[in-house]
Length: 60
Image 1 (cartoon, rainbow, N blue to C red):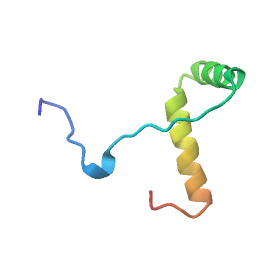
Image 2: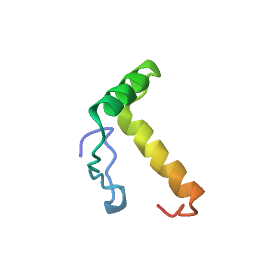
Image 3: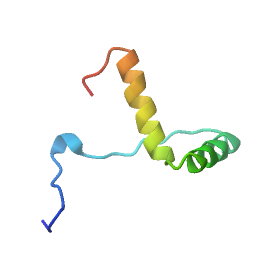
Image 4: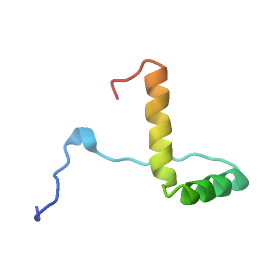
């Protein structure tokens, strides 16, 4: 591996999650994220982590 690159373990493997939502909802979400200087992916990951914490499934 090159300098500065962190080798990922199998546990850190990234995968895609496909979610169907209305176009207007998606567009509003993307716009809000841009206004807050964040990304949709980052906020969805944050939501999932928070949801798992609230539901007692913090082992993820």
